[in-house]
Image (tube, rainbow, N blue to C red; front, side, top):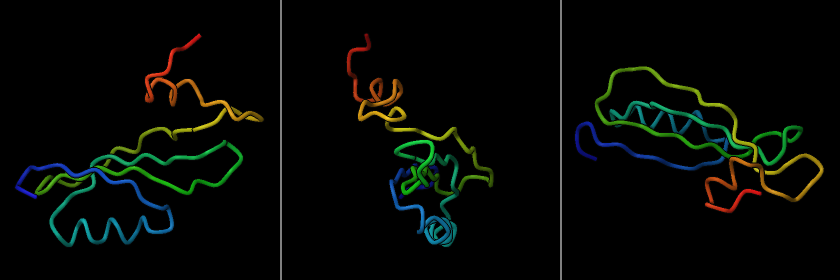
Length: 88
């Protein structure tokens, strides 16, 4: 990755500390973090993280992304927008 280059990854939450450790080891500064949960009552299992090579320290923690509506198999409005589905 070149200086000021950006990298984004999706990973399992139980590996978050390891991911951040290796980013810092290779001079990539975590800049954005977003936790993904299937439903509000379920523990999160996945996260999105963006890093920038050679950047100054500082990370923005974004709101949790809920995938499904409660008590339903229907995607949340935000997930539908991400996938480009028509909203009714």
